[in-house]
Length: 140
Image (cartoon, rainbow, N blue to C red):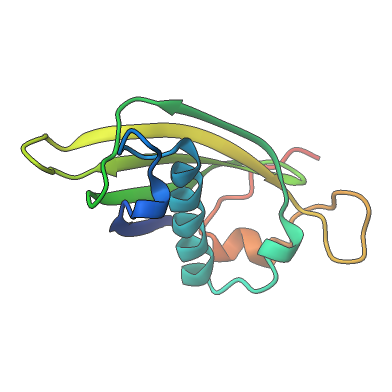
């Protein structure tokens, strides 16, 4: 599947750290969601965030990120279901304070399409699938 990639570049801010001086696990979610927003904006989708709740989120934490360290998070669609999208992501910490560039986290999350006013998941709009650069591999 060939799909667009969303990227976020930023820094680990003080609010992203805990008492030990390295990132708090929730910072990874913020970085990943910023990359997801970049992907959605780049595809020109409107209304996505109001209709795409997460139903699953998993992450492997591999290395620490430090206050002031530059980070790069990337997100891409891994698969498309009838009502779900599965995304994969990586968060990298750039060289910092004599420490080498490292992958800090990787994982995946799943969103479902629940349009405003609906109480149940609905198929993704075909135009959204096309805007994300996805091949429609959904099963009926």
